[in-house]
Image (cartoon, rainbow, N blue to C red):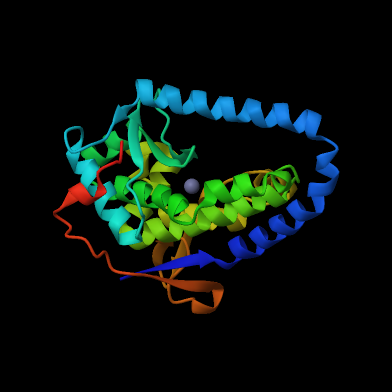
Length: 273
Ligand SMILES: [Zn+2]
């Protein structure tokens, strides 16, 4: 059993986005001549992105990076995902990143190769946290929720606030799946794999209270991810990522049922096509 801590703000902002979407539907009918081509443009753009990923990325499978694939299968089962997302590794010119997306009903996770290299250099914890974080976006249906509330995505500050809340939720999910990887992962994202091990994590955590001001505030309010230093927490001298499970009142607790499949029988989770 794993407990998912859904950031309370995620639900609040999602309700706000639904309200804004409903309010904007009527005025947007008059903008259909502009919006329809825009929607088509976005659909084609997404299709091209997925096409590029499929054509150039390395599809993770039982034959290709099977150890990474096992992590995906295990975490998908733990989170109760209906189908295993298609996972690709892509060369990224040194970028440490990953993202989850969906297209025409299929879910995809892209892991940048530098990030996967970290896992082979330093153990699998970091990549387990990152995969868990990205599967969290799929578990919480974040991508489709953003599509469903497309008009609200055009409202400055609101869309970003919702997105940041989603990121906190997925940090919680990744943290639940691999705590050690979560701690290392944020530091790696901040300073890169080599410098991360030399970092003073507590000093980095304290930056959120010392590196402040209007521009720091505005920069985060317009960002879709929280500031990295704010993704690190200190709980009784222990660093945690996301928010501590014990702060029950800050969270809506959601129970995820135990995986009911035989963990060794991966055929249940093989992609459908
Ligand atoms: Zn994320």
